[in-house]
Length: 170
Image (tube, rainbow, N blue to C red; front, side):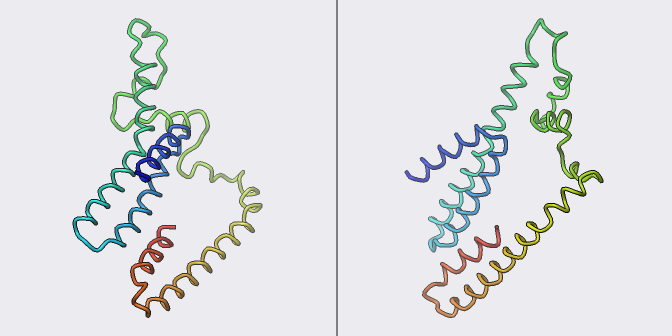
């Protein structure tokens, strides 16, 4: 019941932000940990299917907004002259309105930020990025060593596998 309540809150949260689909990663990460903890095949399969379905449900808000916008703005009937330019593109199944708006009006897209005029911003960000990478690598190294040493104690074997899986996904 707690997982279903949490899933409901996460879906509502995904309705408030366009990047809410990233929440699916948390469900997959948590689900992977839970699957690694189970021993029985039936319980493992049920757990895996639940968390896979939960991750899939995180896409519902994005799909809903896309379809609602297309239906509202492109299927107006007699006002064909006032249709937005992107309405003709909305017929294909791979059209996403939010991506279109980002690309057209905000110049946002994969690797579009990397321009010569952004070099000063990268120089300003370099120290904190280097510290973040160094800290992350140190944490991964020490976590791996800790898990490897604890692995010698077989009583905590499943906990170490969950811990290793956790940092691999991060």
